[in-house]
Image (cartoon, rainbow, N blue to C red; front, side, top):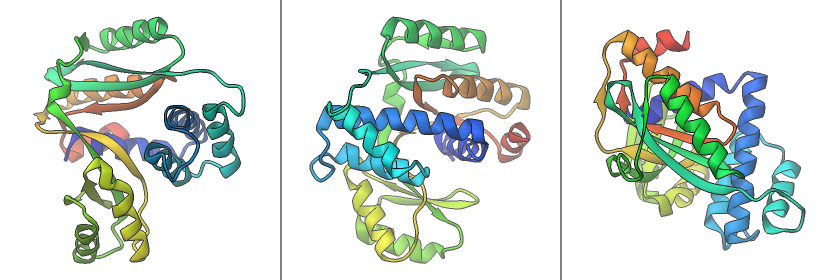
Length: 249
């Protein structure tokens, strides 16, 4: 399993806490605003906004909160202008990391992200240094209560590329432009998909076996993810389940 998928699972579990949930809400709302600003408030014509709206609803963000974010993004309400910035770097053991941010102050955010890397045993890299090790995909989580063959059948017919067993859930992978169509196909079949989002999936992974090194990697990823401007952190680590469970505990 990829670093992103494992870290996402950990994040969703942590997200059950009230404080973590509030931070997740704030980050998703910022993404909704930017999608509306860049492509307009019409979800029929703005696929990015449609994806962000679905992600917000999956996270139980109230509809009126989402609608206000769309209005701020489209200019109907006053709001802060955020800039999309991606940083690249390395975690311990040479694990490649991409950090997606939305910031109203590029210089401040850049300095703070660099500081997080250096304080946690990592290092920043030049643009393009690690991004070639990832490709953009859509992913959809489906509860393990549904039969694998049925999920595979429906997802494939709707245009999915792959289905992976990730313990507590099935994870369907799609091309970016097929994400919403596959999700709709699963919904129509009564398969009740959970989280769906666009992500960066590593094409190669770095195996981190030693528990001490794995925890160093995860501490860096968590510190980055905890920054208010950081929207997503992608990494290509492969850490054993037992080590990951120990860290979560």
